[in-house]
Length: 200
Image (tube, rainbow, N blue to C red; front, top):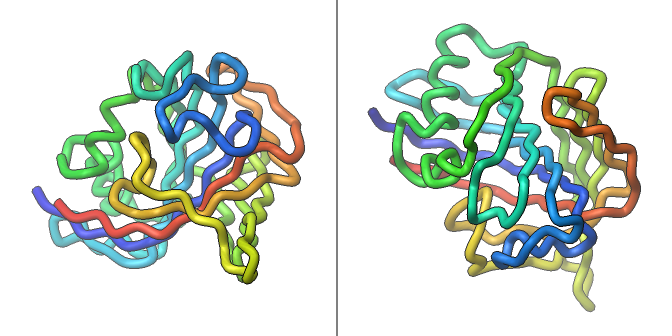
């Protein structure tokens, strides 16, 4: 089983800015409620092309992120074919090994796997993420003194292993999932963007 995936990440959570989870510290609120979305711009899984699709996890992290035991709902782009969905789930459930498997093993319980319309856009560092009607976020980056996006790298935890992330905030972040105990409508909390290349 092999894969090569290239794409972009949008991520928000209810930690303050900047999220302590990425450096191995406990979440600001004791627990962390997050949405992580990976837009696959191009790539294959065992020869199946999966480019043009997004897969996302809405997750409740019960404590320190490195301890795992996350509870998650998985969302697959409604435009994906059945073959593409199966291929992406192989990777993002850890069955295909590689760098994504290290992340997937932190999930203890998956409460649902659903198809949904997913909007994923990034334009000049500003992002927008929508999954169905219950999940929505706008993301804006922090910038350095010359206007370039502020980056975070060499962290103990990452949702894009091997790549730096652009740190920012979410002027809007809304998430509602009763099965996960999540009901949020907050402003100006943590947000992250990145690009990734995953190989296995």
